[in-house]
Image (cartoon, rainbow, N blue to C red; front, top):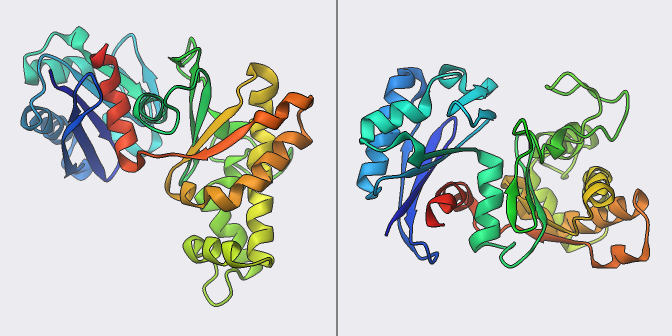
Length: 299
């Protein structure tokens, strides 16, 4: 049996097929082509699903707030053309599938499910996946299952306020951790300090120098990690989650962010049991979203 998952992004659609046992069979990708309209995007998704051998069902990870009951994207600033379209019904019609076998999930939630099934979080009972990219996303696994909450907004760690009255966030609040610890925010903070020397804002070089020796680059990433840790401390205190998987493009710097992350968690949490809090790099990279989207079909 093939379980096909698709990860819909603003610039690319990534997809793959996996067996229920977790063996990856094939991968595929296409340009999203948003400028060509919603029908083109839906046709492209259906084409990829057919090429990958989807058998009566499809998992789809999408950015933004998902309306699970209606099978659509309720709100997504980066995919306005796809908002409130009946995605589940449209794809079911194109693929001649039962609509009940088209499973939609938020992309960060899907990535969390992927890392829990086949990645860094395999075997963990509880974890939070944190994605560090343009923003800060999150997906929550509780008691071995993806938890999305009544309105589908569980795990939105990026909008925990850690600096009241701080920089304005795109969500309308001020001082969200997204304004301090996303890749976008880290690059801005680096440029403001003229780091790394010679190429301000280059996060790859910043992380390389931070690994190499003590200095302002390491201090900056310690501060960025600490700000992220302040937000994660709320998860520890509220849910007693101890495992944090860090992904996204900036997640490649997890090794140099981790000391600050753990320091931030400890500064705003309590109890000797914090000794087993762990911050781990994600394993699946760009595959996490489509693997997690396919996961419900494997059950």
